[in-house]
Length: 218
Image (cartoon, rainbow, N blue to C red; front, side, top):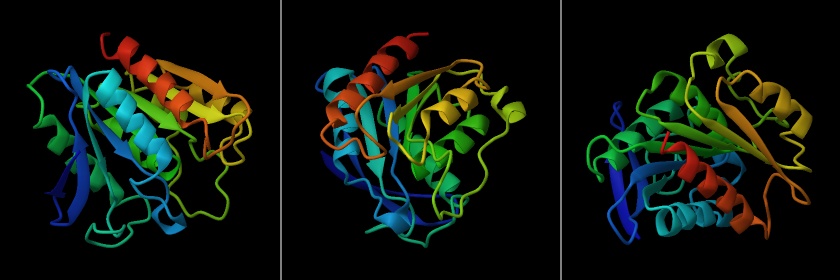
């Protein structure tokens, strides 16, 4: 694991960690964490499991980072809007670690899923998306609205939307209805768990790894 920092286009410096695969990378990935004001950071067992799965088992260079105002990252919380700059800079940074032309997977969990989706619509460097626990029914959170179906139609890249069957922030029926608006969307519901995937982190990570194997070859 290599600690690193990088700078956004508005001068905010963010902290991150890069994990490279054992062999030559076959692509890259960026991980976006949950809500900073609810304790979210890059240092969560689910994100560790996803990072390890994508790097060790799927051959990707993986960058986890803290959004602005979180732990050692500079700046202040941007309400889910300024954080788009953070994701954009993270994608630039991780793509510099792999040969030109290799695909990039963008992964977001909860708040991070909302930010990742909104960035991916306009960022053509994103080859595929994995969105975990999308905040379809957020509790007491002020977040920008999710993209409408008309906006999703332009996202003609593969997207996996994953949730626990008991996720109160992301009810499976709402998630399935929303995913229908994606041109290349697919849903995975993991039974017997909720928004946090406690003790089911490796299973969730394996589903994302399988998706990466299939879709980054498309």
